[in-house]
Image (cartoon, rainbow, N blue to C red; front, side):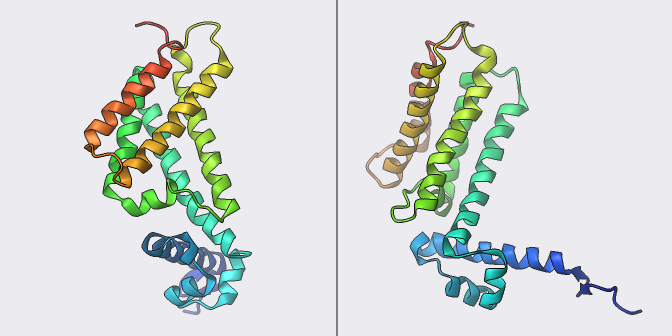
Length: 210
């Protein structure tokens, strides 16, 4: 039987292109984890995937575009996991949701240092990555604010609540980086407990009793 028009190896052109893109992004992520984001190059990912540069430029304008794709994939996974925690039990007290979220992140950082290198480290020299790191802070803030909404006291200071949430998430990020670098000699459980306590302190003026 003759092959279907437009198919090669049983796949359409769009499917083959998507697979090439996935391979390039995967190779870039591997190099990033092994050597840092600055080591990711067009030639490097093409060599690792055995693809020529024509296929690179089929999907990416330049290296920054590729780095952004790697970051976006890691970010989307994290936001999806946090959103799943929020959605799995709508009646869960917000501070319990906070603890589960903190636990998720700390355990992932502990078990997957390469992942943490992508999502937590400052990317000095890459405006694209730094802007994405800042955007993630605001995205995570929005998710937690939405989760707390049903439990807020009436007539709260919305601006103050948002600022305190930003302080909590930004401070947690710096705490995790200090822990990863060895500046904090504490266990994962101690880090989770302390971070949850700080979050509870910041939230106390905004959450209704009970």
